[in-house]
Structure formats: structure tokens, C-alpha cells
Length: 414
Image (cartoon, rainbow, N blue to C red; front, side):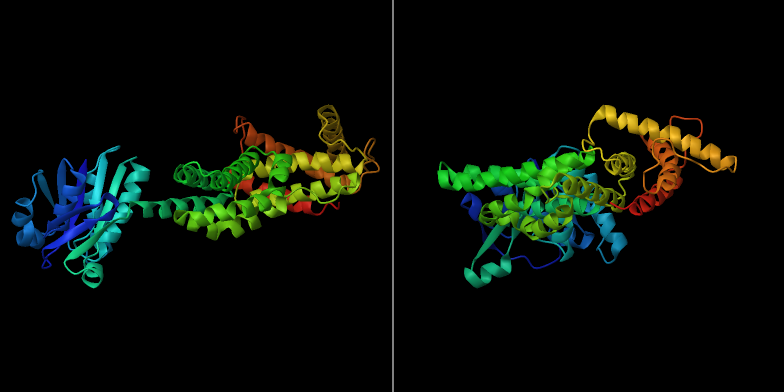
């Protein structure tokens, strides 16, 4: 394991570093010396300016028994130099290395640089960050003169994981990564409960919530509106059941701040409220149309155009009094009718002749529907067939067309 640390030009004084998590104490002038005693690394890599190495290099080398490598870095006086320091850190770590950081010394920017670098290395290079130690010298002077508490800040990397998961959720509506972190919290709390059945039952609500979030996200990604509606309908209840367990975990605080946003994002997609079949059917179409917009707002164009085309078939079926809108054979029959009549409508228009529908004469907005059918279906096919045609549309053109098709769907009354 490598121990990475920083060194400045300050006047470092002897103190007793106390790592409470391991119930260890170590007298040292330099915090990395204590960290070496606590963690037993195979090497110590020190990022320091020339002045810092000149002032403390020899003393630090003589205080540890592991090989020490000094890596020269700039002062960090501007953004460019801060990126140079980050590049130096990254250059001394290989993918899947096991590393630890001591971020006690150095400039005031060093702890932040160390923490951010550790977060990136863990996520980007799959580095195993064993610890991020920080000696709180000023705190020690207040609460216990002569002793300096040393904290392992690596659990705070979880905050950055929550931030990443929250960003993904806000941009795409995908809660799978939030669900993964919730499941981790459940596992941690379950291990700590140690047979406390009442606590375990409470903690189990986290598993149910994580499962619901995953199912909603999977349903959204695979365009399963009815599954999404069913799962969202029970989301608020599962959130409320999970709140007591979340309050038991300090590291789950970020997720608690997101709960209301999660409910707000998904709630418009919940199952219809009416139990009357015909009203419920129209409410379902309204929710599906809301979902089409939900996809478009998050630039999920494949899902948006796929659902839009199927929504138009469902809308026609409802207008014709067909109740079972998921019956496959009937959907295919309606699609064929739409295709044939759309062709006839185009021919009549090209010939400057009036169009008379054969099978859809009683359909409201029939000409508007037939005008939309072919370009909407073509856009859907262009997307789902991966552009495998002689004249595939450019992505930006497809997106604009999909937006216009969605606007047209909004004009169809329910």
C-alpha cells in the first residue's frame, strides 16, 4: 500500500497523534510519520515544493522506516498549478492500487486536493482508498493539549458518491445508483443491528425502497409505463417507512435531503386514481403522455419516440371504444389500418382530391392523426433500427422532429 501525503514549510511541532478508530497513539513531529505507524504502508510518497523538501525532507526521511519518494510540485498559486499538482498525484498511482492519504500538512488547498483526488482515483481508476487521515492539531490544543486527534475522512467520499448519484438522477431520472447506495446503507445497518429483530425489521424498509427505485428506473429505461405506474404508486409509502432507518445512519443524510425531490420527480407517473374503467383508461393515456414529456425533458429520445408512437395507437383504440388497449393482435390491426389510411390520405392530398376515411370515419381529428402517423412511425423506426437505411436522418434533425411530433400529440383531446 502507498501512503500519499503533502508537506509544507510550516514549523511542525512534536505531538501525540491519536487515531481513535484503531485506539492507537503515536508521538511524532510529522503527521505522515504517525500515519506510517498506524497503516504500515510499503512506501511513502510526499508531494512538496522545493522549499518544503529543503526544510523538512531529511528530518522526515529519518523518522520513518519505509522508502520515501519526494515528488516536486508547484506552489499552487493558480488553477493551472493546482491541476499540475493533481496530475502529479495521478501519475504516482496505478489502476487498482491500494493507497492511503495523509492530508494533514501542506497548504490549505492540500486537504481538498487530496480528498478530490482520492474520490477521482477510486471512481476512475478503481483505486482502493484505504484511509484518508487528517490530524486536527488545532482541535487537539483545545480539547487535549499535547495530543492531536487524527480522523479518517474516507467515509466522506460517500458524500461525493451521493453527489454523483444525485446528479445522474436529476439529469436522467435514473435512480439505480441512488438505490445501490441505499442498499449499502441497509447492509451496514443490518450488520450493526446484530440480531436486534425490531431494528432489522425497520432496516428492511431500506431494501424495499431500494428495490422500488430500481424497478422504477428499469421500467423507465425499458419503456414499461404500466410497471412504472404501479411502482410509483407505492413509492411515497415506502419512502415514509424507510425514513426511521435512514435517520439511524449518519452517512445517509445526503439521501434524506433528496427524498422529496425523488417523490416529486416520479409522482406524476403514478397509477390512475379512478376505478371506473373508462375514466381510468383515459387517465392512463394522460399519464403516458406525461411520461413522453418526462422522457423528452431528460433527452431520452429513444424512449420518447417509442412511447409516442405506441401512445397514438392507444389513443385511436380508446376513441374507437376498444377497452383492452394492450391486446397485441388488436394493436397490430389498428396499426395496419392507420398505415393504410395514412397512405390513402397522402394519395388524396397529392391528387388534390377530398379524402374519405373508410374505417376511421368517426375518429376525431382523423386527418391530423393520419398526417402524423407516417412521420412518427418513420422517426421511431429510424431510431430503433439504428439508422440502418440508405438515408438515415441526422440526430439533430430527428430530435427536432420528435419534439414536433410530441407537440402534435398534445393537441389530441382525451
